[in-house]
Amino acid sequence: MDTASMQLAAASGLMSLVLFIVAMGVLALLAGGFWMTSRVKYRESPRPRPEEQPKLPPEGAVGEVRENRESQEIPQIPKGERPLTPYELSNMDTRPSASKDRPRWSRGSSGSFGGGGLGAH
Image (tube, rainbow, N blue to C red; front, side):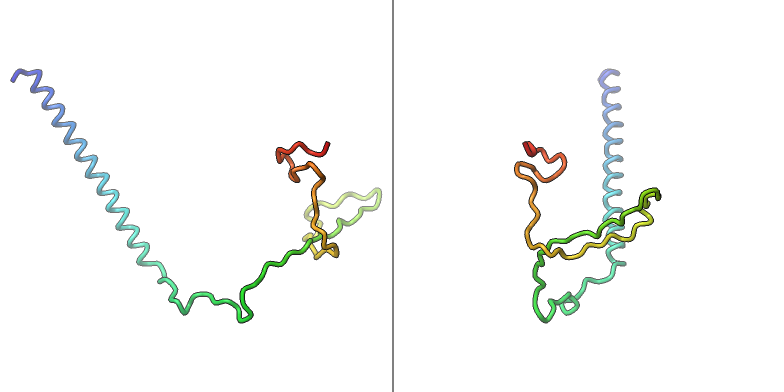
């Protein structure tokens, strides 16, 4: 063998040793991840037994309730007084509406801002 082929063989041998060490490092990280996961899982509380699972109420499953809701009116400010800030307003609750008609958007409208429809023309 000449010196050029010896130098190539030495470099590839060193490269394969580096790749082997990197592969062993990756395997060690994977094994450490599995080990840590098993430790965390061991410390968790056990899964609930079938008798500890939630049960349906005695009257059966709860059905869907459809109703229209109305918001409270915003208080009117007398002329000359300063407007209320959001922090001065109470929690604006809603109440059931007397109307049973479902609210509809105007014809030709998508019903949302920027919804992509043509809008009312």
